[in-house]
Image 1: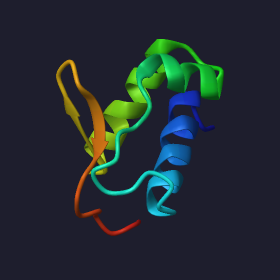
Image 2 (image 1 turned 45 degrees about the vertical axis):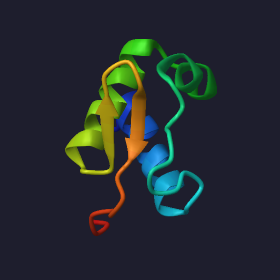
Image 3 (image 1 turned 180 degrees about the horizontal axis):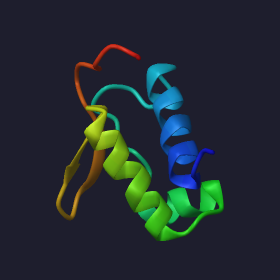
Length: 75
């Protein structure tokens, strides 16, 4: 079973690896992602946390989440 937060995280990772969100690029904010994926803010927060754990994004307080400059290898 795949959870909604995993689905969201996986799709954002796909977008990052495809270059749709380039290194140093800003990931949409929580509200925008919730609207795009039709999920709750809590689901988005969990997905972004997963992306940080995967080493794909860094979150800057009051600034947002940005794609890291050097992506880790894909699993």
